[in-house]
Amino acid sequence: MPRMPAAARRAAIYPGRSNRECCGVAEGGIQLGVDGCSVPVFGVPLTAMAQGYARIAVAMASGGDARARALQRIGRAMVAEPVVVEGTGRLATDLMLAARGRILAKSGAEGLILVAESATGRGIAIKCEDGAMRAMGPAAVELLLGLGVLRAEEAEALAIHRRPAVADAAGHPVGRLEGRVRTEVAADIRA
Image 1 (cartoon, rainbow, N blue to C red):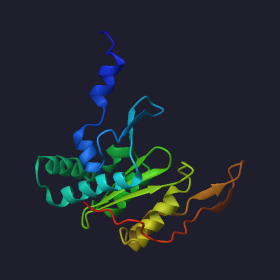
Image 2 (image 1 turned 180 degrees about the vertical axis):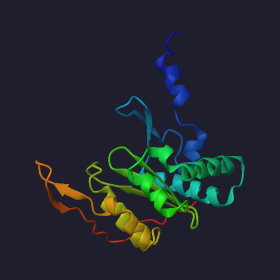
Image 3 (image 1 turned 30 degrees about the vertical axis):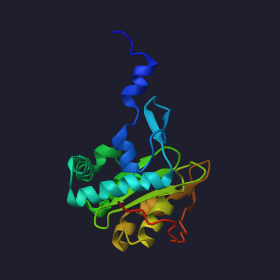
């Protein structure tokens, strides 16, 4: 089978109007890249990511026009089968399982997790500046607890992510990571 020319491949996968409008990004405002597995990835500001997840959150709760109904189906499918979204033992999967369908979560590359809370229509983007995922679990669980997205018993059920063990080079436990989060909201992103 002949290989598709690069320009045609880019045109086939480049984020169109729906992606831009959901995230509130102007035409040309989404950067196209490739992750380590050769999968196309789209770069947008964190506030735009939160905006997109807020739109999913609202759609999950109330549907609406054709796009909102499509987002509703996507969001509901993700929370119905969280293990299919990321696999077992992953922070996003475990957040969805602990919250029993109240939130949708998806992690991304370079220390990113996105959350949609359908009850409030809120989209949340959390990013570790250094791009590492090591601190994401403790920070995300504490932040979501502080914002009222997670309940205390749900946060405790996420202990493996909330307070992960730290081991030395020989594999012996030497401590735990803990998140200390100041819940100062820079922007309240809702659809």
